Image (cartoon, rainbow, N blue to C red):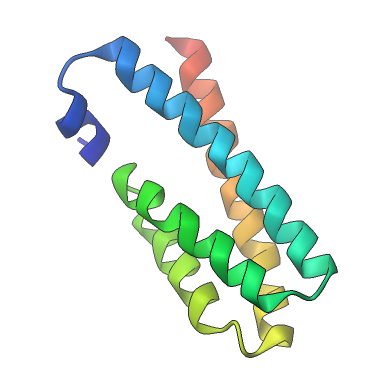
Length: 106
């Protein structure tokens, strides 16, 4: 059980709404990190990684949360940060696809 399920109890409609909002925030984060990478703006990359961290935790995505934290810590090393961010974006995209598939099954 994720922290979201613990917080919402058995309110399936509310869980679905929160999950959909989370999926939308993933899309926004991917877009903003990509833009920041193109602009080589490490501060913005760090900001967007930090912003999604708590949601990743709430939804039980510890591995991605660790990656988001790593991005924050690496913001001074733009070359390695770029490589890591591209993989993070791929992972977030896969997570969003899984969430959307799960939502359409319900």
